[in-house]
Length: 324
Image (cartoon, helix red, strand yellow):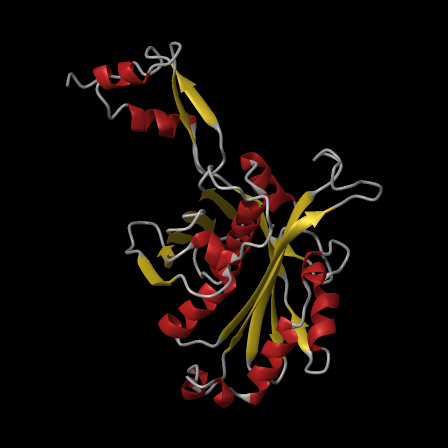
């Protein structure tokens, strides 16, 4: 159900691949409706939407490697005008697609109209964290590195270099796709559909000692160096092009080395909020506290991930209240 047939190039899928003879493995993800749905739900400034699109794409690339139906969460926290990005991915299994969601926190007093801000300027100084939650009561694992570099991809590469000792290269791209005849001033329904894409490669030689990332880039394995340079040559336009199939793009990049593309998995937007879950949270408060939350006869709560708002009356929260 979650498998993508070889040769398909549908949106919202992730495909593993291998660069033959180079001990390099990778994944490519192309997002259409999924990333558009998430970003439209929030209507962030353009620069904020692009950052969140990158976070959604990156967490899918990383989370797809999970060997169980657990959750991988990505978080950045800094002192810049976009102090927080959160994205999480619930891994796919034999019957369910992978599920992704995310949101951003930004300073609404900042003018984001200029496009000159890069990642470090928007996020500021802070940390980048990956948290793996296997579920079923198993212990969570978290890795943290400083927010350094000019992109979210740089932060993830540093994480693998310092925490996993795996040479890793990542490319992310987020943009809008405009329909024929539309302009950048046309309504959102007819133009400006959000798209994103990402590619990740890792050097995974059979010799465990050779897998360790060298401190000096000049000591990189030649096959890895060449693969990394070829991947980094891909343009943003190529990555998010809805008419360019995964196989064709990978062939453009790695045809001299030889590249094998494997069946992929689908990805869907998936928020885990429910009305009953929020009601359960509210019922932890006493009746006097809930009465203070009333506005026009309702208590309202919104989910940060999907921007869905739920409203309750006190009668609807009629389960036994605490007396104090």
